[in-house]
Image (cartoon, rainbow, N blue to C red; front, side, top):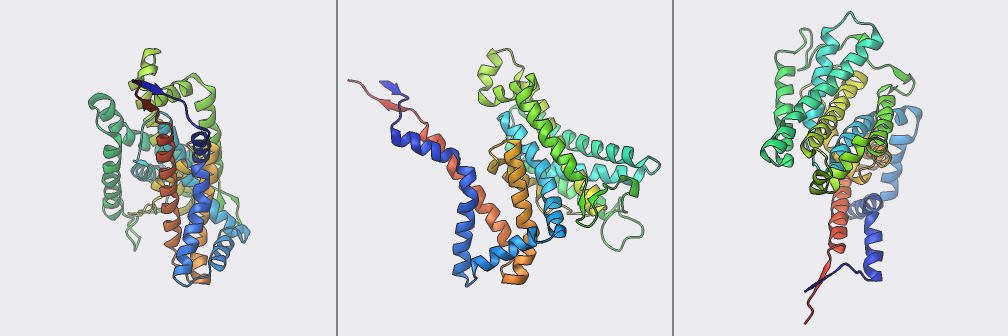
Length: 357
């Protein structure tokens, strides 16, 4: 028996095409959604035009788009950081909720701090809360071999119900008619970069994190260890890398970035904590990381695109009569395209086994 790694020209071309599967996922999903729109009697050109107008048609619309993209950028960075280590942290949503909870508590409780320091402490608290929530599945994986996909996914529900309980009960504001906390202090609110656009400073935090994650992953020894563990844990272990330590630190940073996403959303947009304050930002951050091929720059671009879908969905519904949920359908189809591309690419790289008489 002989194992052959040789591939035909057609296989090479196929692999090259599949390597760009995440890029092709966007036009592919839009094309499929256009077919769906035609099937329900809607003009796709008018619908997509309304969506683009709602997302980029004015400075205010652009600001809303970027505000919606900001938590996606941070959650996506957290997802890609763990992906690079071969760890599938699907708990971005729960970690985001805990980060929002911590930032809200600090923003309400510590009222005598200078504005800049109050913002910094609140953001740091959000990062720490997300990291601590991710610490549990990290330890379970390294000490007991528990599958992190299952543990992080289940902890999402624990986090969401915990935050809902606190917002509806112990932390509910005394003078609020809705089930929400009191607003955070003005000193903890993220300032607007351009007041006319409502674009807040959390976007600058996200951009700084994009640069930081790139530097850490590709310009530091720790980043080399992370990528080595993601490529082959066994080879990394033989090279002297403490795989368990690297996995735990990676998941802590991943969860911290998701927690930071929740903190930015509270301090920059909502200013109060409600039971279900995130419309799936954590899950969409994972989508952004997949579309962006687990690269900070790609995740940034993908997050802005997904933010545009969310921001322009309402205008698409008003102007073209297309339900706003079509934006989420588009997002889901893109995920299917990405997953299919990855699966086919792996299949294309399977070595051929030939029998020699």
